[in-house]
Length: 137
Image 1: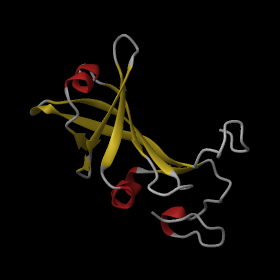
Image 2 (image 1 turned 90 degrees about the vertical axis):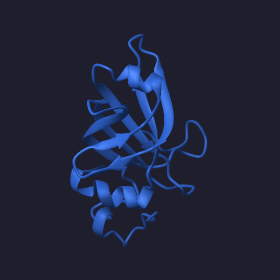
Image 3 (image 1 turned 135 degrees about the vertical axis):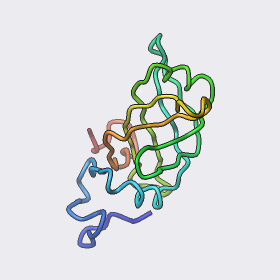
């Protein structure tokens, strides 16, 4: 993963500063960001009873939607369509994590597959070393 170094901000990091809480991700950034972060994501959904469901699965960007094969609980949560967050933790201590938001639903052509329409995303700065540290959202 690229390090966010003051004085060295180009390409996808252009305009970001070390104090930035988050760096916006656009649909045009997705392919490059997935190359950078990999394709293994935590998929977060919410059930009808408001209980969260988190699974770890590979995710594919096909240029239009994100796709994954999560399992029965996640498929049930998204049966009627619903919000999804994909979490890609930083692979480096002190690095930014990637969060992608979207609307997910089962693929009508493959009942084991979920399709996720990307609605937004950010690279989020690391947490402070201890609770109550300097970094705040």
